[in-house]
Amino acid sequence: MSSSPALSLRGSRLALLVVGLCWLAVLFDGLDMFIYGSVLPHMLAEKALGITPDQAGDLGSYATFGMLVGALTAGTVADRIGRKKLMVACVTLFSLASALCAVAGSVAVFGLGRTLAGVGLGGLLPTAISMVSDYAPRGRGALTIGMLMTAHHAGGILSAYVALWVVEPLGWRAAFWICVLPLLFAGVLLKFLPESLSFLAAKGRTEEAAELAARYGVEAPAAPTGRPAAERWASLANLFRGGRWTQTLLYWIASFGGLLLVYGVATWLPTLMRSQGYELGSALTFVVLFNLGGIVGMLVAGRAADRFGAPRISSIWFALTAAGVFLLSVHMPLALTFVVVFLTGVFLNSAQTMIYATVSIATPPGDRATAVGWTSGMGRFGAVFGPWLGGQLLAANKGDWGFTAFALAGVVSMVFIGIAALRAARQQARHDSGQELVGAH
Image: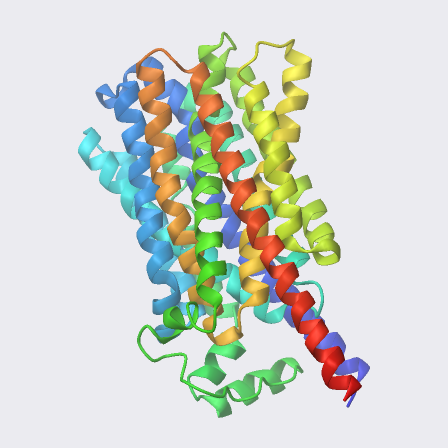
């Protein structure tokens, strides 16, 4: 039965509302994530809080460790309290944690603030991806997720301008005070963001789901069959049933290498470029170009993934990323370096996001938040290791080796997501062959 034009129009408005609110939440997520890397060259130059390069790497790892905790628990918590409430809690947490960083009088307190901020950041992203997946137009799942992730890189661009305009006249603490402002947005989410319809259906709250669907003129989801999504650890166990364990592990390893690369570069790009002789303004310009490339890459990769498959695009993108990151270790003219940084941003950030898109699209709605959260969470081990590795190399005066190490991580992700793509293609071919045999009989 086809939907009426009025129903489709109101459903489109609901999708825009959800994606728009999630986009703004992820924008603030990106600002808070990238602000540390953007102000780090200034903090090291000023010896703020007595930070040394190896301590700076540790502090970057504290935030990504917090993100690991947030990502691993996001799916389970979201399945219990709802995705809307979890998003509000995450925005509130990372905003208040930034206030703790702003008033920190020691490295320990600053590290605590970054760890708590990481918990909020890690919980927000997989939850927002699951939310927009619920409301994405049919056949446009990867593109919608790619559009959402442009917000993360818009936040990275914003962080560079905050560092340029605020840090020099007012100091590094002012940058973290700006990161407290998203606290006001938590109230907006609480008031206007609808709850996930699939969550309501999975919890058995069918009347509430039907009422919400009627209010926005969309079709209510069918009641789930099989084991309840709220059953403890059931969603996680589902990721390993029916031969899915191999694909799950492949995605986890690819995510490890991808996030090592993403957060290693995000934390150390301005500092590594400055160590090669670029001034602070030029180093922060690299951050802007890197994230502009990320925005372009999300839109291009999303459309390409919807057409050719997210695993295939992710594998190709990681190969191009590894080449671009390695080239950054070679001294080139400034204009050429700008081009390489931009293209690296195009491929790097969207390569990792296409892993999430693959997992989100391939997973049933009841398990989706857990699947994305754990894929992101396993990758966070790489995210913890990346900033630490960069700090150790810089402390040993081997900063140029940082780019080589990060490029090797890209090769690892290319290999494992490529294997996952080949396995998926073979399984689909066997499925299609079986369907043909059934049809013949």
